[in-house]
Length: 509
Figure (cartoon, rainbow, N blue to C red):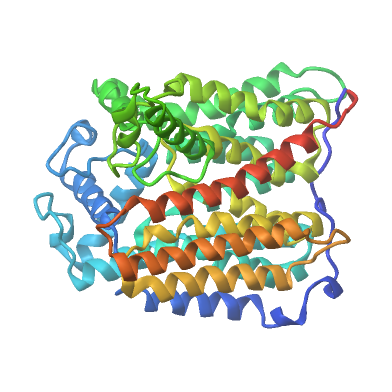
């Protein structure tokens, strides 16, 4: 039997001696500096996601609920779950106070100075949820770790590039995730389940961590020393069903639940995004391209044209020339199989000290083997790893190693020459600083790790030279392919190491 073990103090407190003097400034000063930097980024490049979210403000403000997932006035239709749509609705009530034209449905591409300031500010404000989670985490494990975690989160290059330049709300969503995990580590199981259900109903891609939540809560909360507790199981189930009912119920009632489902699961977009996320399927796609080329050299023409489709920069269902085709059901099966050793270990030994690293691993499984994964999803596992790194030398080493391929893979998001210096500075400075200030423990970095970092840097040097000398129209996909594949190799190595660690024998407690 497993008894419920408190997560208070888990993770191992790190004394002041473990923290380098580089981070002596208070966490408040770091957060204030990060705030100033994010304000300075207001005029920076904005991706189409900026217009996506402006359109969602207009959709939820201007249309009745029954048309939220039906309207196609803009090509940027609402494709997040209902609780995020309600978040956009609440923002729209404030947006009209800044610029009423912002929420007019037909104002496609509208981006006045007030609109930019409001939307950028909303990202900064909602990211405070993640800062709150970091504060609560450090209050439990080590107050002295907060300046370090403030650096890893408030000045996180992934969040800076994706949220504060490219434009998204990952800080808010990851904040809800980390609050849920903090509640889980404090044995606040019902609150944790509630927050996780809210998160999934804001962005359904986080559901990949659902199996871990289920296994951990079943073995700790629902199966205490006295045996299985059906009332506790029922309470958890009621909490999750209630959140889903509030979120989805109105759309069942108005008959648009089918439209909502088709928006949330657009399987027609294909296995890989236009820029291959650095995961297993990027390597699979590269292998297929190589095999297609070899087949051509051998006079075998099967799939010769299909291989070219994978590098066309278009979103659509990819057709492999030699390797078997991969559909959504296959990726789901592979993802579940990949996380199975972690789930087994959790069932045998549900240790609260491993919650952060375990959730990072299952999110990594979803990233490595999921269907139509975006490169931005690296944040789903590097942020939990950053929380773990603030109080554990072994987790700190893992985060420092992972930060290189994870953050470098985000560089193609900002493709204009004007942002080149910014993105390189943010990523390289963070990765170098993290390696310098994080507690290292007893294990030393291998020569292979150093060689891999140099290989990443060499690839990025080539990408810059390619853009300057050849321009963006000659072999345009080659720099993207090289970035994706080299980053995928590093992340696959991380996945393999973690998988081996879960294979160690354990005994049922």
